[in-house]
View 1 (cartoon, one colour):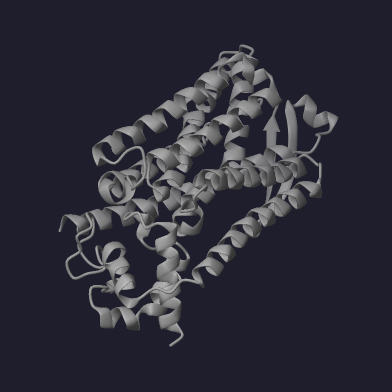
View 2 (tube, helix red, strand yellow):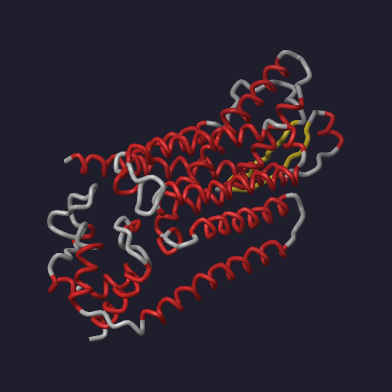
Length: 397
């Protein structure tokens, strides 16, 4: 019964996380476009303190967006703040982490061959990973290094790369990618809570008091906002990465993750430049070529594995033994794998007749590295190749 409630809790918070995440990222992308698309105002508007504006049409209505250099002549009675989208996204994401990876730590957080095998230690390491990552970022963004754009970008890239590698050593493969995404999401929410909103409050307080606002907090808030902008696409990938075991289950999954983060962040750079009137299609071409090279390299590796598996001759007994070890622990009437109370997808693999009937479905799951789920049982590459070879033969009978 406990697993049933955990499943429902996971469904609810995942749904809320998706909704709030769409609201946050949508608002972030909209304001990035808006800020970079403002047109130079005429002298009359400049005299009114207007820095830029633009006209837009949406949903049958025409809108006029205006940005003031400092403050409008008359302060608005209602001022909308863009912060709750960020906070609720982070809160629901944290609850989802609890539902999936903390309440089911034995099944999803820790894994074979990792530095951490104890679920409780894994939870502590997860919290430390996220908190320490936020502390390191805050130390970097508050240091004088923030004024050295290229150096800071290089250090931030190195930091994220190291976190990718560390996550794959500490946590299960599936959890590793999610933790890197959670870290970047925590940094993004921290940017809003620790930098952007405090700077905006100081700005409002100074203007309402008739004082000149300190430009330093505003400049730092702008920098944090830019960082959030470049994190957006990598975080979205990490959010959906658990659907792609052939990526998170790769022997060099940390390098694959670094490559995808770098490609998506670089592709985002094209749109940021375009909003400022700079159209450089070579950025998209380079990003696309890098993606093709990555997918080609992974595809060639899988081709070699398939060729190697083709020369194997696996007896039925050896194949059933592999299935008993790596599949039946979950896919049985009474699963022995912690965290499972019923066979996933209703598939039973403790019956040899059923296994032969399900060979085609099993083949797809094993070929894509989807099963064993998160490779909880520690199936080796040779064992996977042997089982694929046997399933292919049974499928072609």
